[in-house]
Image 1 (tube, rainbow, N blue to C red):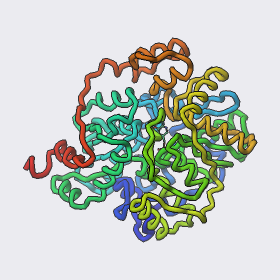
Image 2: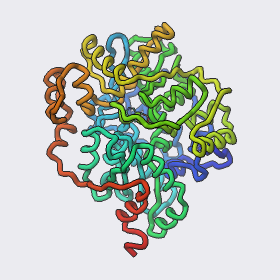
Image 3: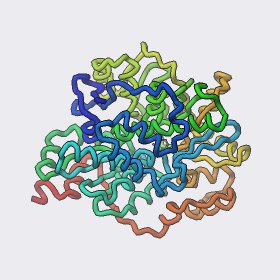
Image 4: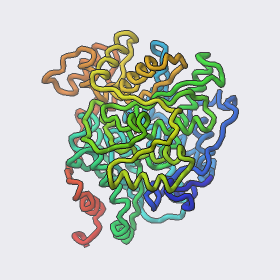
Length: 494
Ligand SMILES: *Cc1c(COP(=O)(O)O)cnc(C)c1O
């Protein structure tokens, strides 16, 4: 199994190199040269989550070896997940909510970021690298904490997280700035997520800066969802939940299902797309956006246009104008046309948009939900289904309802439920009629808990009393200096 760049198919690397580099040197993203096929689902039916993860990861990362992968899986999916099944599938009003938020940070990013540090560690050993790895990450909220949680205290690795100072929820912010671990560094960026992300991308493309770090024995790597080591573990839960539906006799083996994913950087839904092309029986992949509906336009109008103001919504992890992983889909949908991908990405960065009229995107349905849709969805699901969903999941639910209205399709459906409702307490509470005016976030969570009978997750409760350890604020322009300061490299530190 080898990987090549979406912008140059000659540029081939092994799985461990792809994991270590995060992003290809030519600015492209690594994709598997071919997807492994799972023709028979029978052997998967009785696997638990860890067994299935090992089964799938071995197909993509054979170079890492069975023993290492087994250790990685066992360390990742252990008791830090509060649900022993790791992911849960709840059928509410005929729809299947795939709960991906039982990890340490209560969002689906834990699914991949709890295993990535181990994949990196083993890749580093296989490649014989003695330098210290510096993980550089921009986050729209959930990635940051999940990465910090995964990498904190891991030897030989440091982690630096940039988040938009005003673009994350209170709980998300507290989760990050209270992070412990000598090897962690958290910085608030003046600006939005795209500023933070494009700043990080520019640093990855700055050869001089990377040389400077190298002299001090540091190499950069990424934990963002562009890293193939994050993407692949996300395929597992789609196969796992499909098998659950078969076992519960909700569907018969081979029956196609729809998968709805609240989408931001296009990583989670791309994993579902990969799953489909590996043999998972899928009817439609439903991409749900919030008011930042760039992707809806891409699928419905054949145009990707980031020339607009980013809108801050109640689903901050999807407040994104540049969905990085879409480059991988573009590569696939154009029949692996590296030149076209290169041109389109150049247009996107220079002109702010590109057109793709000739693409066949019929595997997908795409739509978006505004704040009123989100409020209504949270309320409806609570009132009618006695089930609490977070704003990201509400975006997905709302778009699913629009899909059903548009198509009358009755195919059994899985909705990726990506965060605990307690991570976004204010919005969830107000949607179900709790008066939140002038109330403190933690007080609101108590009220939410009282009204719904669901207890506040321990990892959120404990935030209240944790000391704030990261107080750094920076402009986008000053990010490199912040990094040098933390690593103590460069002129000022001699
Ligand atoms: C990151 C995130 C998303 C978006 O996932 P992508 O893989 O970036 O498309 C949706 N919901 C939550 C809660 C997230 O943290």
